[in-house]
Image (cartoon, rainbow over all chains, first blue to last red; front, side, top):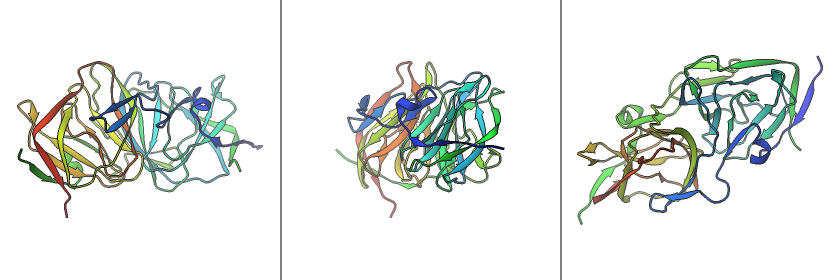
Length: 164
Length: 164
């Protein structure tokens, strides 16, 4: 079985926009609240919850390290899925455009500490790939409904390389 | 003007349940996902979004320190509001039962690092009270609609004391 590789680059909102949203406090806040003591960066993610409701869950996973070879991607046709790290650490994000019902050429990003991401509904992405053991992420996604998980086993695994 | 005080105690799910949910990975996960690599603690918060939609925003605020005297509380009649710290640090949570349309006797909690909270709709609570400067919190609350913020200026300020 042959392999293919992709180099992980620093995550930016512009590069990620076709796939989803970067959840980070960029630039000036949209408003000041709480007697002017708190900045609010407002409504940063394009969320969808078709056929169910929004929920908050927690994911906790063992870490991977780069280079990392993966062969599983997934998408959620009915709902977006946001990952908010609960500790200030980077993680790995791998997404792919759709290519006739299967993942196309993958793109890999490493977040900066303090960034979360939101995958748009129906965007192919790798499962959660933490870079530190025991990392906990708050996940905002669709609760209820059905048929919201489509997994795809890549015939040709992808090796994600560090950008060094 | 006289004052009253409350001692902040460690946050637990049981003590907080009348006011909302503790968002933390307690006990065994509800399911294993991603080829068995990831724990999912499922649907941990009682969310409501009446007249609008769920959104994810970020709050960033200067820190306070204990003892802390406060005179502002607020509630959101139409929607729940979850605070998810994006770094592993404690913060201060002050809530109060309703007493004929105004905040009753306050309760104060200090989170353990790694805990978030979700306030039920219509629960009186203090504004975000971080204990470290520059802390960023992801907030899941109602976007759109209107009339979802009710503030109350306490005639008698409350001093929150550390539990030492």
